[in-house]
Picture (tube, rainbow, N blue to C red):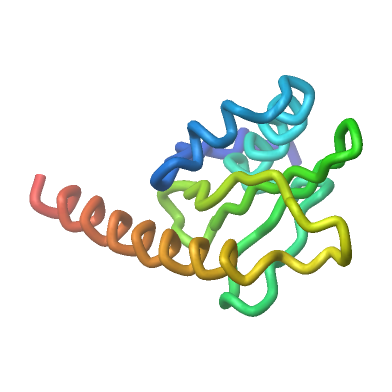
Length: 127
């Protein structure tokens, strides 16, 4: 059986996530860029882990660089796109838990992504 090419879903950046990603060091952008490409093609990125406490389908990528920890959070829950919800440098040096303020921001942005997904689906159905 031959390997069929996987359709690539577009990356959609929610709120400031693209700008925040652009502020990451180039090496971190390179790693996350490849991992997001894997997600776009239906594969599992190496650093991906499910983000707990928000609901299913929200994934966190983690990369350590130069003593700092960077995170990119996305959802692949919608079949038409990968939504990048939040990109940030983890501030806390104690523990691996995602700060509550970031969790709340991710929840809000997920709701925005959901609304965008519905709007795009409605737009497609009226064409």
